[in-house]
Length: 288
Image (cartoon, rainbow, N blue to C red; front, side, top):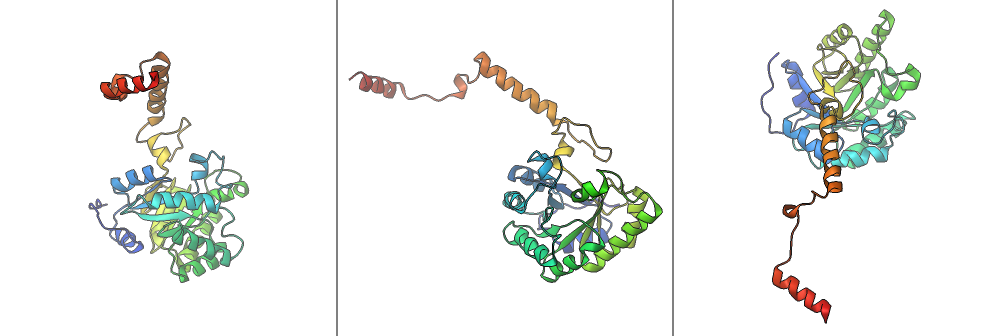
């Protein structure tokens, strides 16, 4: 595959589709705040996902299920303020779109209007088709998400590979085709066997974004914190850790604590002082 050229213009769903049509791999990363978004955008990533994974990496939850619309809107706004080029995709959190297509449309609109996103993402296959159509008809781009859908972790019995059997693989393919027909501009394939993800990608006209789904997808997505090694936890098989920042940051924090306790910070160069004549004048005032 060819390498993507440097970009300065804002990415759109049209430019993302053109990359896929030209077999230019699409890059996507998560970001959850202004600093991570600015760095990710400066690096030249094609799309930034403000994922409900923020519940686990930013808010300390064990799953994405407790994340609310207000949580998402806060982080979406933070990211949107710092991004110039990447296409911004905001996750619809658990129970913000499952009740009705009207609820789905309302909350999708909030991520665009209040959160500053360019598109929304929601999980699920054929059961989401009606809601997706309603959102797309309102002029809001939708990214689908099938395979391992973290909001259904309790129903799936944990974070495990999906589509392992022939019947399950066929259902995933059918779901992908239904999502495409419903108007999705792209689909995330998560924790799907590599050969199945490649087969689905070949059957679709819209780009697929893989995470734990092999190299046959049109693009890839990783969680910012996993890529940089910001957590001291076992690395998932599908994650490539480009840096291991956890021990470096921990060491820096411990050095700061030791410096403060040992009296070496702050040093003279870390402080400011009044002009001597003003200091003496102050002392004189205090002695009056």
